[in-house]
Length: 416
Image 1 (cartoon, rainbow, N blue to C red):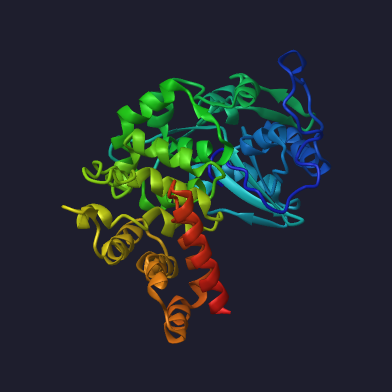
Image 2 (tube, helix red, strand yellow):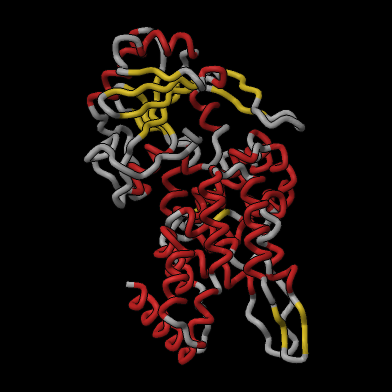
């Protein structure tokens, strides 16, 4: 499981620990209630002379609450992977060893997933895509090398002692995203953390500290050593956030998007000298945020106008983007392949980008046959296409917006 992440979904009815709330500074807890399954696991490690802590997103989301169910739990231990594997024997229903070379052993018990990682430091050699793992000996050092202060809290097992050496609770209360060490150290350890910062801005609505933004801008080129698969995973999580426009804005302003999605910042076009055409980049942010958090739909919203820079022409009537949907569909496929998306996702996003303007000819008068062709061409993507079309209407002209909405209502009625 990626560092600091605690995905939402079916989880424990009361979280990993007890009552969920961010306490006032003067009431920071010294211990937290721990559920029985974790006390049992902690007892096994303690009896073998090893330390075990709940860390990362499980602790963070315990305090954030808000219905964030804990489906997977990250733990840190002084035990090396071979010893962890031995201790899980007879306790776990299943063990997962694919992460063992990097210090992580996975386990499941009664439908719950646990990721147990040896105290470590991760440092990327300058020109390599995979971290060089060095096992550590101390939980405080391990916590100091984590990505952000909100993920540096820990709960010792089995007794539930609470550790917060870098002010994680204070950062949660202030909704500030900062690093426990200098951000250049944190981002050198793993450059993907820069993109993860944008993901947390999108999913949590937090504000990055100025020094974090500055370091992201200075070090954006370090993202080049990160594999496309890892970048894709973080981008997906960013796109599904409630505050996605803020996350997208951050990757553009810091230059991160230039490294893996240059078509996005390219949408910041110069203004139409005749009609003062709207900012295409800001329009794109708005369209993405107006769509439901469905990955295919939000990818299509993100890429629906990327053909505009290449098709932009300034005429006496103003700026025109003839056939930008066709060019955009081709560019979208090319970019998604570079980011290692599946063929199914690429096909669906390309189709949505290609068809996103079709609705705008409806006002010229469609026959019943034209409506049937529209439905047939959209196929199983029809509902997503309708939503993308509605989201694409960001005009400030209220009369025009009402006209478009009414026409969309009629078209969707005709589709039935």
